[in-house]
Structure formats: C-alpha cells, structure tokens
Image (cartoon, rainbow, N blue to C red; front, top):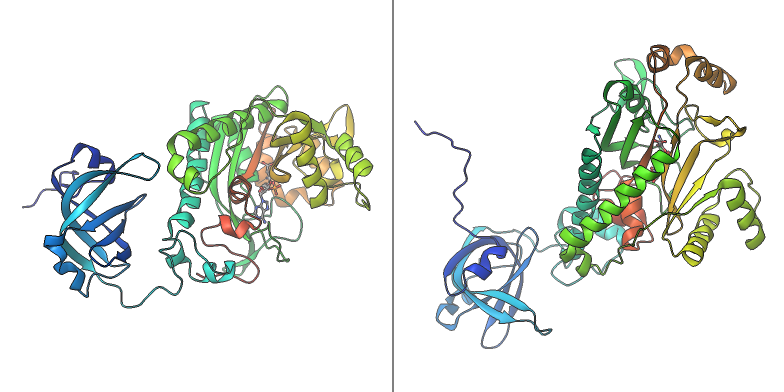
Length: 443
Ligand code: AMO
C-alpha cells in the first residue's frame, strides 16, 4: 500500500536556487508570461510565484519556437542549463537556456487585458472586472504580496507581545458600531446582521486571554460610492486588558507599525522596489487632541461647518501638518467627542464630553479607530440607555461587564486603507483583491 510521508519530492527548483546550480541542467515550473521573439533568438519569460525568470532558446533547441502549444499563459515545465548573466545595472542575474518545454496546460483564449506588460494599462473598472487575470500582472500581484506582509507583521508582532489570535462570528445578533451601514440577514426567519466589526466579541475575550487579535473580513453597507469605502474589508483588530491608560493602545499600535514597516523593507524588498514604495520611517508618532486639531483646521481651512468630526479635507490638512511639524507620516488624534463615538467607548473622567479614544491618520487619512472601553456594568447600561439603546438586547455582551472585566481597550485597523496609502493609490479598490462596493459583487 502506498504510504504518504508528508514530503513532496520536487523535480523542479525555485529561482532562489539558480545561483547554486550555475552550469547544471535543472527544471522549473511556471506560467509562460511573455514570449519575445527576436529574429535569431527568443526569450520566454516564465512567471513563478514571486519572480519572472528569463529563459532563452538555445539555437540547438530552437524547434520549440515552432511549437504552437508554447503560448503566453500556458502552464509549463522547462528544463535547461542555468547560466549567470548581468543586468544593465550590473547586478547578478541567472537565466535558463532551454533544452525542453513540457506544456502542462494550454489556455483556450487570449487574456482580455494585456498582462505581460510592466503595468496593466486599462481603467480600474476593467481591471477589476477581469481580476482573476489582471492579478497575474507582476505589479498587481505585488500589491497583495505587500498586503500579506502587513498582515504577517501584525500577527507576528502581537504574538510576541502575548496576544492570542481568535476568530469571532460574522453572523451577529446586533450591529456593533451603530449607524445605518449594517447588512441585515434573514436567518431562518430571524433578523440578524453581518458583523460590522468584531467589537463585542473581542471585548468578551479580554477576561479570557487578556490580549487578543483578529484579522478577518467585516461588512459595512456603505450607501455611497466613495474612493475610500468598501462594503467588505479586512479589519485587523486587537484588544488588550489591564491597560493603565489608553496611550498603552497607541504605544502597542506604534510598535506594530514599526515592526510591519521593517518587515516590508527586509522581506518584501522585491515588491517594494517594483512598486517604488516609500516605506515610512517611524520613530515616535505625534498626538494631538481633537479640539486642538479642529482649531488648527478652522484657522487654516475655509467653510468648516461640522465641528464634531473631520471632513476628508481636514484630515488631509492634518496629515500635511504632521509631516511639516514633526516629519511624521502618522498622527494620532485623541479625545474625540462622546457624541461621535460608539456606546462602548469610555468617556474621559476629567471631561465627559470627550472620550478616551483616538484615530490614527496615515498621510492624511484615517486608518485606525481605537480607545479605552467602558468596563463597569452600571456605567455601560446607563450609557446605552442615554443613547436610546435597549440593554436587554445586549444581554450576552453585557455578561462581560456583569461578571467582571479589567480596564481594557483596543483598535481596528483597515488593511485596505493602510495598503492604499502606503502604495499611494487614490482609490481603496486598488488595494482590495476582489472589492465589494455598492455596484460590485463580482468577480
Ligand atoms: P471603525 O468603524 O472606525 O472602528 O473602523 C476601523 C477602521 O476600519 C477601516 N474602515 C474601512 N475600510 C474600508 N471600507 C470601509 N467601509 C471602512 N470602514 C472602516 C478604517 C477605520 O479606521 N470597532 C472599531 C475599532 C475599535 O475601536 O477597536 C471600529 O470598527 O481604516
């Protein structure tokens, strides 16, 4: 009987092994990304998971140039001799002089968008309509490799800080964030909601694990088509107990961001270079109170009418201000008004009009909301009643407070928002692999 050992016997080597195989005949597998047929020789560029490998037909094996199965997007196994060459800038490169091409699978149609050029050259909507294909373009896929790095950094750093990774339900008995942007769901005749955030559950887990984090999709029924809102996005959340002040949460986030940026520079350098990303340097992040930030905006910008929150232009202005004053791409804005923050937010005991909460702006756009939570049962019930909520509907959430909860707080960081601003996109959809917006649920 065949036994499965858990070891895959690879007949192919990855590109990283080319340098140890110069002068040897090896095999690789990948997609034929581009065929560049010159008059007396031809290149085949093979796309593997992270590289483009240059392969060249040796003259004695040039019969493959006539093989009609060798077409772009075919999946192939290529065998040949590894040779060392130099790029124009003098750096080392290795290529494969082809001896044999085995076609593993051949496409039946030409891609609807040219993906073998350096860059996808079409409208964003066409790009998104053809996502399974356009993502094959090296620049497009680099976006989501970097996004992987952000999530990995978040996970790795928090794990070293004693956090436990959790998964909370996405079908919920209540919308945690309030507002009208909640998706209703018919759950066997009962009205339930898609999770707007893991808020109520991550708090419930604080007395269990003290520190928890989650990276998962959340759902917001955004009624408008904007360049920074998605209907489904990845929320990177954490919640930590026994905090001494809500600045503990901002310190933890600063540590997370430093770690992420460093990880991107070291382990995601090919994608960072390809997309020419300017990775922010983080030393310390400045903090400003909402009231003081608003005063700055009122002084510098015209026609500000909403004194309770920021318009996008104000955030953009504050982003520039932080850069000029503190050479920082990030700015914490703290002590938002009580009226504007959700029911679970702790009011400032020194001034109950404001909360122990914050937003983090990155290059002038909010990427995080967070703060300290109410942990006292009576205080939470009273706050809910004041806001016109029925505490009875939140009976299971209030078990947290009823049966004892330490002072705690946390935050939610929008993965696509962070990616968007890191990569300098104007539209958050560029930073969503398969975006969901008011007009799009496919692909
Ligand atoms: P908030 O609702 O501010 O806070 O969301 C946190 C972060 O999520 C991102 N975000 C979005 N990204 C894309 N499309 C959207 N429609 C969208 N809405 C929000 C932003 C935002 O800063 N429970 C709290 C967090 C907490 O206090 O722990 C919450 O969800 O980057």
